[in-house]
Length: 423
Image (tube, rainbow, N blue to C red):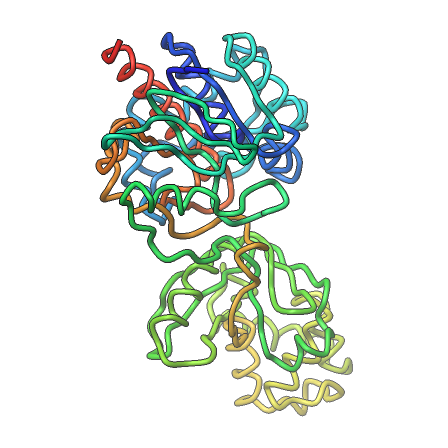
């Protein structure tokens, strides 16, 4: 069977590539090894599907620290605003939440997945599920099609690889695309987990005394072994039985990974600012005033409304203060240390969960070998890449899906235009 374009992978990027390619007149086959399309899309945004982010392009790029600048060309042709219009034109009403995150009003990812798959079908794209690809076929220095694991060979003028990275493998992302890229002459930059929970050897983590404690609107800072600030993120976090998780911790993860690779150390320090809107002096003065106002109360009880209760024993212990003393017996030097700890509570971080447990894969097909306007390979005519298989990664919050949709659209449109020229 001969097609203009074969798209491998039915996730966000592959579905959008199929839409753009068929819209531009190409005869498209979409193949996926699973039994269902849009699996990762269906669990994104906590099952609500954060379809994009409404930030201005320059600001949006800042939230894609993994080579986000590469996306300028693709976003110029199909931006986050275009993504919003795309879904709204299909009857999916969107709403904006905190930090520009865009969700369907239905709060159901299924709404988005069903609409996208229906659009693909309506445009005449042939879909084959349960059809794992064994290899991409290359002949005479150009793409020739694919061979399925069943042995069937499918001919095409172009192939778009949209199989994702190695994160969340239960959705089908198992790194299938990297060897196909290497066979075409591409290099794969080192893969590593990003947007992934952090692990810690601290005794208070191992004892699980803080497990389940959620902190809101705190600031996390990652420091290198020389005491230099690597990154700072404000948001929510969660203590777990193995370390810390939550949005702020996930955003710090790639910096932890890179620091542990760069320096000969077993752990890096992360500090938690429990009260980002106050200075250390403010904290010292306010807590002292609280103790003075309730001078007969034990300080461990005075602090209850000021900092999370479950943290108080640890804060006092690290400060060298007995929780049972009252205002008259407060040692000023140790109380200042308490204020410092409230502003910079240290947690040793010795790693992250695995790439399989990460939300996003860092690394991938080297972008120096990809045309940013078209997503076509510079090494192999007719070969295109889009989505997480590329060395692009952003924070959670609609940024990675934006990268998937815009690169998918660029690949689909460009491949369709190129094959029309070949006719």
